Image 1 (cartoon, rainbow, N blue to C red):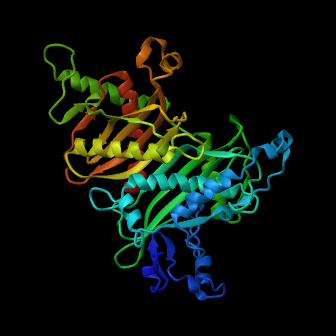
Image 2: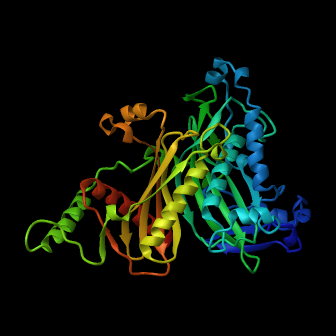
Image 3: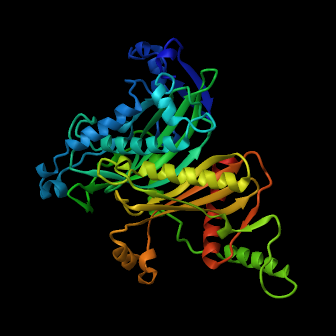
Length: 459
């Protein structure tokens, strides 16, 4: 545990999913480069998504990490770079380990931080963790593209790094203790022309001092010109030093080729699934062809739960837009509330998939979140949240962009979030059923996502 009150503990190792993650708890020993502990850390390299085991180094808090991003961006000086630099400057490829960073959320010693992260259940708010993940992804991306591998130095090219999407967040443990420090580490695991994948992990010591893996996340970041957000700025490439790193890069490359299956057409098997479902619903009606539900079923549109926010300046990021971590937190908390009401009891989040940041949200926008249950399987449910904006000063403009017939009710979608939840208290939950074609496609999308989650982290 990276905290003052744990500095007396010695190095411990817990076997997790075939990989050893060392607990770094005694900096004075770890600073000795020839010590047995330091050598063991260097040997214990995990192949999990190309992220190495927790390594030694300076213990910095999450607040230090966030402030370093703002300082780095403030020194960018885009006017000092010519168009020739942006097009032709040589950007040397970096190693995966070059961008590795580790920080601490000091819940054991910082009472103010404890209150910020405390949930109604007495554990850590997952929504706050999502904000930290987003900050971490930005930090690591800037490290990868800094001149000297540190945010104290300049950028190799002027750039604004923003979150394009979140490939996945898998939760191995949701009940995070609010009085123990949390370790967050991550690094770049893929780099394209102007996009990067950042892999992040979260750890916390259990009551016995063993390091427990809490979650793993993959963020997709993009690099843009600070003077013109529509223009791409090249990023440093990535080279592999080990076979495991090469495999990680190749896997990410394949993902970028098929970034999303959100608009994937239904397969023949899926069409037959919907057909059989409606035949069954209609067969229950002895009078006409109107579908009939049983008591254990519910129409998808009946599961909708919504919330509306005003976007205040306190939610803005360093670029003057609404912080992506805030959007993820609000979406998660709405999805969690919806799932809890749906399951009539406590639920646990198991995964987040296909999180899309399609359009920036501005200060002053009216922000709408609409959530609904898209698929159910035994005690597991899939929840989708769609974020949209309306601007009271630009309603006609938004209406024209979206659909002229909507008039003053026009909204523009900005984000999509998908969550897999597990019903903890009530295994007998209602089965969601799509009523219209648009709901049927959403149902199939939710089915794919939930089945993938079950295969990946449940089964």
